[in-house]
Image (cartoon, rainbow, N blue to C red; front, side, top):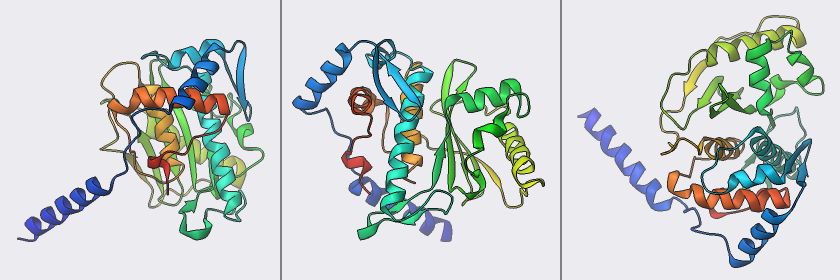
Length: 274
């Protein structure tokens, strides 16, 4: 009987969420489409954000269903970081002090750091010491962050998203295709311990920590959109938001990414409102 009540309650909660879920726009405005067209015609370096740049050759990959490269994914990560820093500042917070509530009940600004795709590839190829991974965090302490978020290029063939959530004590992996996690969790646990030994001079305490693979992460229906799913996953994780996108939305998000790269700023759309 209790199981039946729980199942009914779960179904009702899912029904309410479906009714209140905000929709992804079907298309850009005419003005935005014109702006996208202008961006796609540019030559050389299209834009800069933080330490990342996007060139004309790379931005053409957002046409159709072309596989995204490191340049595009890392630029998107830089925009996610930029917005997170702005939100934290607006909340009166400072990096290293944890997240803070935004004024006016507009959600919570998280204290995050977004690594580039080269973090995980260098960690797994060269190792922590040889790859000098400790130098990546000379200017900040990851253990004072709410989250560390990073794109992962698995075998040079498939994009996934990694996240270390220090509040929930979870090492998280988000994959838009079925498949085994392999050594991913082991590698990230090893990283946490080596980083803690390097910065805090003692081993990391994994008491209460769990490995987490998201069971209902949106799934791609082709072999080339994984980079877009990874970019959108990073964006949502940076806000503690639901993954409000699916395969049918990807053509829209590819066009939106061109617009955002042209502006070097993430756009506000209904599904990104707190």
